Image (cartoon, rainbow, N blue to C red):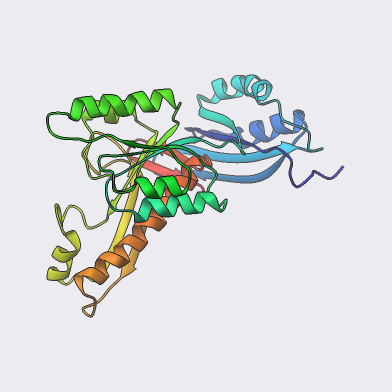
Length: 290
């Protein structure tokens, strides 16, 4: 019987020390459970000796998946190989909170891509330390929360943010050019579920007007880096990077415009790959199955 095109897909992502029989064990279980593999990626790291795998699967007859039952059936295999693993519904829409300050490009890009189905997100809130972009959130029908931040109010502001995260059952926080440094404690509480974007000229050009600094030095490449948030500022595991070649003919403003293009693309890719369970974090690095 041909599997219907709209059949429910499950996604299994795993990592463990490489050993003989891993792929056989995974595929054998799926066959036993009347599942067929829709998409499969694997990576055996010659440096770390780790094995990484992402498998997307469906019932051969298109019937709904019993993911709880499949998880229970997979547990002995995971224990045998000492796996870190997760099994999810491929169609699940993660609950996402976007944080932003006054630059609109990343926020607008994410909301637009989501509105046309390029991303599969349930954006439950936009949080900002300014009111500038309330209209952008409103245009897409997303609740907007103004949480101002000063040096004295920062602990209270972060507590308010965490309350929204808890109340809205947020699964992913996206810093879409949120121009505030998160405290170490907040970074720890959001570990593994917060993504940031910044221009990739750090640490050379820090602080205000980085593209003007880059122009003054005559840089030939600019770009953007999307990474997981950690207490080490802008040094979390990298998910995606975009790079553009530039030359002497561009003004600082044109450099900044090109930089915005790179930022939107890098962030959109990182968010999509994370929410499609295509990213595996291993120490300070990631394995990304595009």
